[in-house]
Image (cartoon, rainbow, N blue to C red; front, top):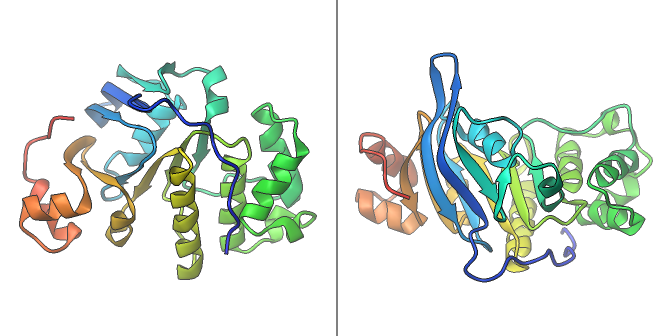
Length: 253
């Protein structure tokens, strides 16, 4: 079982943690993100649900400032992105394993801590203990199993204790027990005041989120709780609900 983490800073009640304002991203003639607008309140888990190629990763990259928008803008904690200084308050776990195989487990965590301006070596130890890799600190990352690399990626995203965390399909390729541990930890972070955006195309993970945004062809086609979306679609499962909303017009944020 993962250990509890240090309490992250909490945005003031009523604040908007994450804002998308008419976000557009074109790759040539393809609109990967096509006019997305929403406000996300702090202290919740938001799920971006949609098939591969629906625009989830591009949307996260726009929100984190990792890519520039063709139109519109994004804000995180009231700061317009991209903003280098604001990255110290954001955690980002990429879809691929964002670690360096030639470095040890400890060196990877130390590198990301330094990149975020964290000088406290205790923060590195805490992050590795959190994902149960403290005893593998001297092991090369390239020798880890797939699940262990995902754990290390999560530790690197959390080492600076960010109040906002973006997770791009964090449970892809992990075993069921590790998936449960990951989600248990995500919930503990949110209970401590963090805001988390998780992308996935796995519908059975959706009910672990407080609120869902269905994404299709670069647009938000529905938004609400799992129960609320099922009720609105008149279906007992979210996969069928998604198919129902896929034929509807884009919903207002």
